[in-house]
Length: 176
Image (cartoon, rainbow, N blue to C red; front, side, top):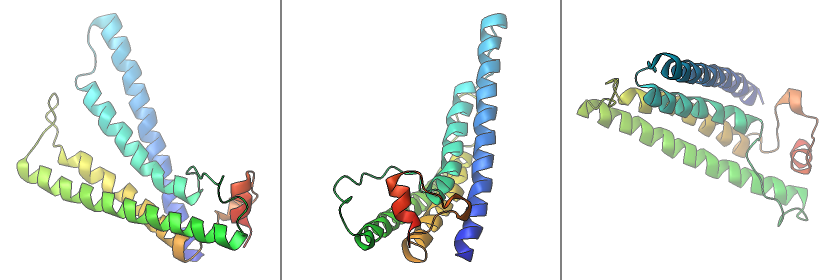
């Protein structure tokens, strides 16, 4: 549980950083639109920056979503299963998510190296493309770590301050 608590704190930091990036992107879009409409001067490369910023914000939010077990769970077929079976299925789902996120983190890292070697840049701003790939890997890797811990170490654990469950799926997970 100590490991999950530490990962939770790191995931929360990532989520706050991702939210700040999303807000900065939103502000930049407003400034660019006003600049385009009022002065015929949008922010150069605004589309490239929005694509990069949104992808980064999403990847940084994934670990916190997993900590909070915020992913969609369709429990229509399993709602009558025993709590033990439901926890086993939740653990299996967390393991599959961990494997998928680990694969994505690995491939984005490999992609960053390949794009860096090819010296690819964005079309308008000519920013190095490898930055985008490399920035996605930490969020994906942390999401994989959180899901792996949830699958094996704490399959039914939720974030300590959120142990009061609201939905049936959350209530199921909150019980040991």
